[in-house]
Image 1 (cartoon, helix red, strand yellow):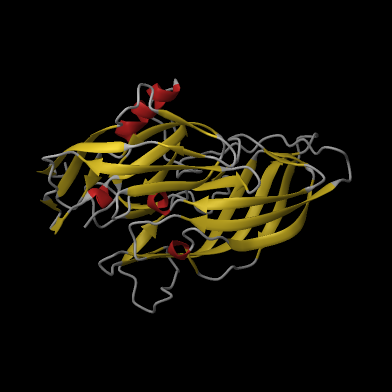
Image 2 (image 1 turned 30 degrees about the horizontal axis):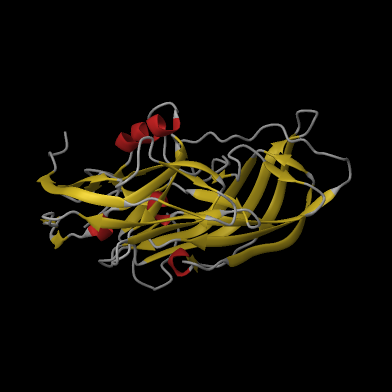
Length: 335
């Protein structure tokens, strides 16, 4: 069975393509992210903004991924160094299957009033979190119940849950500017980056929320096709036949913040709700299975170095891939 991919070895390539430092943590807020909550410029005293939040997701390698959002909090400090936490949502959304949100959005909050200013942190808190794999294994946070009613097989580990650290990447990577007008953000929940199995330990699963906030009025897309070179064949690996659907495309705007896109059966991939900017385009070179690993090599035909795309609001950038090597090998035994 396929599980978490080896990402760190590609952050170096991302860093080189963007002129950044090498190998950082995982995308989104991350399991070890201390967050960027800092000073908040409260703007003109007494002014307010309205904020709406919508949730979306792209296809993932799971049968279901249910989350119950219980709170959304904007974080910072006022001009006197006092903590300023603005609760945007508190309650329960109920179990949302993220995999049903491909190409659509679901409202989380509509037109909530918040103090105007420039916030430096956003935190999403969760109640129920349950994933079901393609083979029917149910993995859940402690205390969560499976909406399908099947028993939980494995406990989902989340060392950052409950710590109060920001776990949403803001639109410009630093601040969320709320003026006296209305703003709508789309929260793009990257399932492939958020859930996975520890390499070499199939009995452990992690949950590291990877969530990207995008201004609904200013975003673009990245698309492309993954082709397979002549004479390249996909082997049986991890007990099943593999295909180019096991190939994962990564787009990064810095060494420790990247998004993933699943390759569809026809070879196409797509990133929607992408914040305008420059992105390094690489791929996940190794897919880990329980006892074996699938290794890829690929090129970007007709593209020079660095392998980047520039995303503009309302426009679509593209990057092709050509897989020229696929190898299945046994994983070394754990130490």
